Length: 108
Image (cartoon, rainbow, N blue to C red; front, side, top):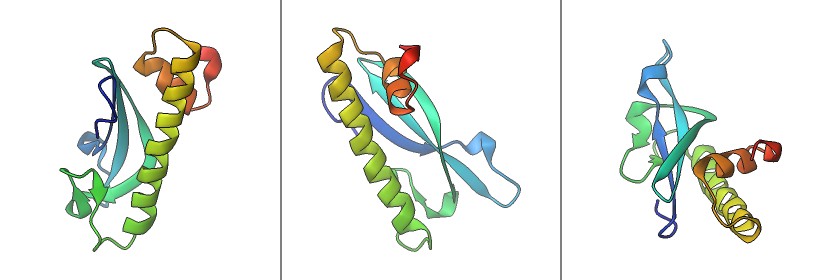
């Protein structure tokens, strides 16, 4: 989802990391001014229950409510981190944003 001209937040499946039971980790990709960074969300879902276009779990998934709530909350939190970083720094990078969201502020 493109938040503004500089920031984009996408959720997707990391299919290469699929487990033997068919669960696939959901990753978070942040793009700031065309530069990307990504991290694992800690959530997993079967590909059948994932909507690639919307970046959300489909409603027929038993865990869809919690996964979709996580995605919505994470998006809001990343936006807050981005806005705080923009107040404190002239140039914000995707790596800085990832570190700020993951509470590793000393890395930027």
